Length: 404
Image: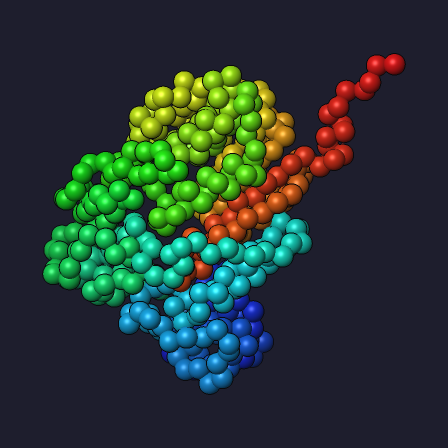
């Protein structure tokens, strides 16, 4: 029997990964959106039946609010509405506390790592930050954003988290179009694509990071927050400490942002091998890194490049920025085979990071530092940069015995 539409009053527990909090109804877990830990709310069930292991629901009425709750600034936020944001109802500082709780819980539960986590703000810290937008087009041609866990389109005039210079797409019907992508670069260039085909703006955008220019093809990947690239470059440099003459490996290297700064740090006496599977990103990287002969570009899947020995036999530093699903065991073991002194892992999903940390632990690498950044304000997403180093016992095992 379906429970969708049923309502109940629940005490809300801790925040969970995914933008909801955990409550219980007759002994069954209910993942509740639009709520905060410690609240009492009226919940309408949105998914699940009598045989489900867990249910999903929306807090449709707040009976006892918790500190940190604010009126959502976006008129499209709320139960049954736009699914793009998870925490419009939460003060930004409290959002970061919740994200820190989530990261720490994932590290503990999936990675076996006990660590408190502070998520750092990055300006803009609330609205007007998103430079890349994907707009959905409904069957009648209406333009908007998808509702939570739904293919239905919520018509949207203005998205408040979108960068103020985002190209306008309007709400006029777009028959025959399924998706519209817009982007605005840090240099003010704008592009609009319909179903992947450019309809306005340049074919390539120019981004600036710490004084260096990068070319990004219109449909190519670039971090959505305007301060993301510079923030992550700084974190990788500080944690990885690349030095002149070292050999570095950059996995999932994209258009070459991290590789460029690694190349500058190791200099012409050093070497960087950058591995990326996407052909378009490699073309952009070749242009972006043309002035650094010490950087070698390898177009291949990361797991295949590691297995085939295309990144060399040893490395001083390995940097990886995998997709949301994480690096996974084969890649982790391949990295360990390079015997790096430092591994810097850029992660956009704390669960995937935690699972990979557990595998790193199996091959002798432990987490020694972690940075976390609120690069996706109003959402449950959080960016982490982790430093892994060989355990002391593993280091000692690799030191040859002294000659007497």
